[in-house]
Length: 238
View 1 (cartoon, helix red, strand yellow):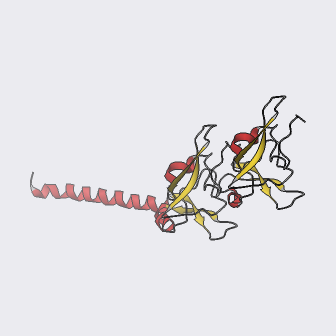
View 2: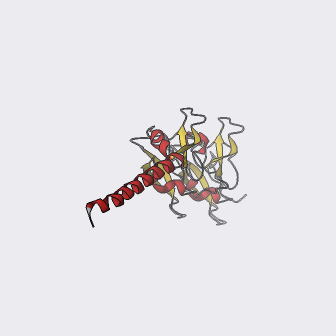
View 3: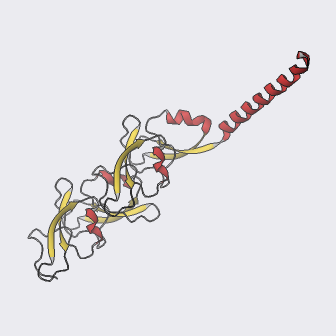
């Protein structure tokens, strides 16, 4: 075949490549994704916005934005972002060590955005030491009021950001199964003293110290006394 016969074939191939490129560019400019856009407002730190993939690079150029949007929604408290990374609590599925504190990229969250039980970002006091009961992306906590007569309010907050309560050192996360304490807990280095019910008639309680954040699973024990009375644990069952 002569060179003249090959020219139309090359021309057709070039047109096909051009058409594919234009189609890809068109798809990129119209395909939409959702992003957690940082607002700079501590009370409402993120707004979920829909952008095209062509606009995504602009949004991800802003260091505090999060993409993709986590399954449980955008965080309700501002995460601390260092070098494009944030600290989260990864749910392990273990009752003994329910969460691992790990650092992931804010851009993609290393895939953890699709984990409904992960806590994004991690609370300031650390990851919970007991598995949280999550309903529709929310958990129940005891919010410390500062009042001696009504020391805690039982409230429901988003698992993703904890509505800022992860930064409250005196809040109890999650709320104990028996309800919030009727007296203020004395917290030292993120820990409180409780009376653990033993089931023994002669020695009904052990006085132990547990993490305020998760209560080392004792929040699920309805017979435990949280916090321990100032006079010490009872020597007889009530």
